[in-house]
Image (tube, rainbow, N blue to C red; front, top):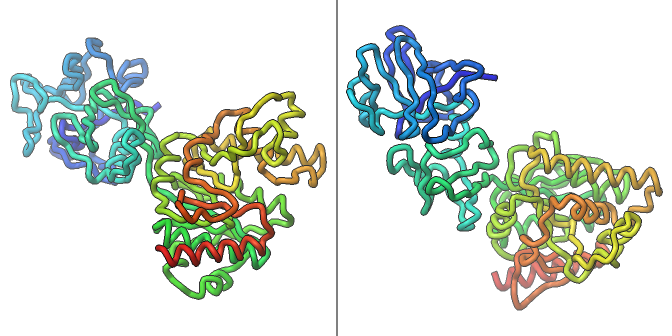
Length: 443
C-alpha cells in the first residue's frame, strides 16, 4: 500500500516543496502530477492511511517531516502544519507561508493520496451527467466558491465530507450538504454498429449513421464493426465527410448469422471501445429521429446496462425473448415484458459487473451451442440476453423504452429511435428509405 499523502489548500492547489531550499509553495491542479509535491509518509497502521474522510472528533497522533509538525484538526476536518516556531502554514490567496499564530480555514489542508488528487483533477477536466437534474455539466465550469467547496450547478460540494477513495474515472459519488448522495457519471459517449456481408445490411447501416448525424445531432465517435475495408465504407457514404469523419472501422469476420449477431459482445479488452461512457450499441436497421442526448443521459443515469422493453412480448410465452430458456430452467408464470437486444447501452467496458455480464452471455450462448447445436439459438443472442437480464438483474428495461418504436414509422410523433425488425433485409431498406425521406421533408 502506498502510504504517501499529499496536501491541497482550501482552494484546491497542490502544496509543493523546492527540493533545494525546502521552501513550500503551491500551484493549481494540473493534468500532470508535480514531481515536487510535498508528501507525508504515514505508518502502515495509521488511521489516515486507510481513510481520506476522518470522522469528526477522531484523535490522530501528530506527524513530523522536515521539522514540520502535522496535526489533524478534528473539529474543522482539516490538517494543520506548524514550523518549529509554532506558526501555522497559511495560504492567503497569494502566498503560502508559516505566518499565523492561530489556525482557521486558510490554515487548513486536505490530505489525499496521489490517486485521489488525480481523480479530482479528472473530475474538473471532463463532462459529467447529473442524474438528479438530467443535465450534462463540464467540469471546467465547476466553481471554487468557498473554503474547500466546489459548486456544481445548484449543488455545493464540501470536499471535507467526501469519500474520495471510491471515486474512479467513470463514476464519482458526491455528498451535497454533507449527507445528500448523488453519483455523477462521466459523459464521453460513443456508438457502435454491426454490419456485415450483405449489401442490404450495409445500406441499413448507412441510413443508421446518417440519421445519427442529421437527426440525432451526434458528433462523437461511431464505431463500425464490419468485414468491409475503408475504401468500401468511403464509397458507401459517397465520400461525404460529415458522415465518415469520426467513423471508426473495427474489422471482424464472422462466419454465420449467430457469430454475426453475437459479435456485438466482442468489446471487452479492446482499446477501440475503452474509455467511452456510455457506449451505445445499435443494430443497423435502426433510424434515429430525434436528438440522441436525452436517451444517452437517461440510460447512463440508471447506472446499469440498458435496453428497451418489448412490452407486447412476455418472456413467459415469446420464444425470441427467452421463453424456452426460462421454461427449461423451471421459471414460469412470468408476464414480464421481454427486452430488445438490438439497442444496448453499456455504461462502459471496464466496470467489473459489465465485463462479467458480457463474459457470461458469451458463455451461455457457447454452452447452448455445445449442448443443443448451433441451430438452437434461432434468435442468436436475444434469448440468452433476456435470460441473463432476468437472472442477474443487471439490465434496466425502463430507461430507454419511452424512446423506442418498433417496425414502422411513427409519423405523428418521434420517440427517438425506430427499430425496423420483422422484415427481410431488402424490405427493411425500402421501409427505412421511406422514413428517411419523410424525415428530410420535415427536418
